[in-house]
Length: 492
Ligand code: AMP
Ligand code: MG
Image (cartoon, rainbow, N blue to C red):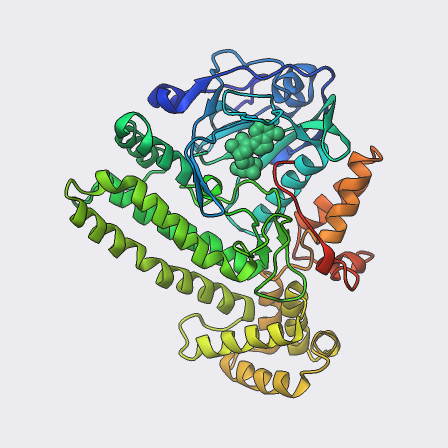
């Protein structure tokens, strides 16, 4: 298919759910400059990269021009933020430009973040800044390369404006691409809006959009709840396997698609510790690394509550049905995590005794605060006969590690160690967006106008499994003490 010098956007959400969509225009920006552009994603969407990079394309990415036929909207949603219900959040600084259908037939949202104040802006200025938008670009693309379901980043445009934060910062707009922007909070909002007349149309829209089967007499709401439980269990398991802390798992940041969204205060953990928190406002550790599965289930319970009237007309029956679905979360999560651990360690996922083996490793990692990412590469090295990296990661636990290794080797069955090690290296990354590298690259970009470090890091984390000579430093954890004092921020 020829890619056209424009972008064809539909307005399915805006048409289907006018009560959840406020037609809105982006605030124009003075001098947009394209600072990051995702060629491979543009190809996937059937977009002409030359057009995207042209003045006309950049005008669309900056919100200065609306493609013909598009109907941009700010989406309405509510959300439980740190456990407290906010009945009206919505896109305060973002717009859904519309939906694009790629050459593969997939329908995806194209969304601008940082495009000016909307009716949902509350006290906010509607803007976003360059460092945090490049951060979201980088994390999303790293996630994609790691095979973790995620919203994607198409572009970042510097606006030419200065935005007031703790210090004056360069303004920027991110173009985000997503399977949809339907969140748990969208359903909470629909439930409490105008007597809940929007709830059923929203559920129908979500079920169609995400191709959820409508068979076997199950109501669409129940099918949607089941689907969301499955995809969220899988998503959080994948985060746990790569050592990722989302940081702000409010219900407005939890999608129905199962894609990770809103990479604000998130960060990857170096030394393994379930209590790891980076977000400056998460004082109680609600969204700590080890709490994420339980929080996901809590958020899904809010989704079930919001949809109760659509699950069954009789409230008790609806509660019983929803509870039955929610109870399956733990098993779903455990299965996904356990399957992922089996792959990371090269063992048969169906082998009995896996759970002791996996828990044993997690317990060792926790005791030694061993760097999560390096541990799995070091284990593969050990299989190849080189224990140097593993010894360095567990200097004070060699006896326990030796005993765990004996169990692991037995669990590998008769498989040839070098072949297992090679398979492990194909799923365990060398390069992740380590906090100190991300911060340095964003500082250079935002404060110094130098994008080269950002581009080099993006290049590494989007091809994360192959060790590259000359990039040994980027594979190592942050210097001692860096992560202990590392803080991330929301709403930047
Ligand atoms: P987030 O922390 O990015 O998930 O945002 C939570 C809510 O705050 C959403 O409703 C955002 O649209 C809104 N928000 C965050 N930053 C701003 C801003 N600078 N201006 C307006 N709204 C904002
Ligand atoms: Mg959000």
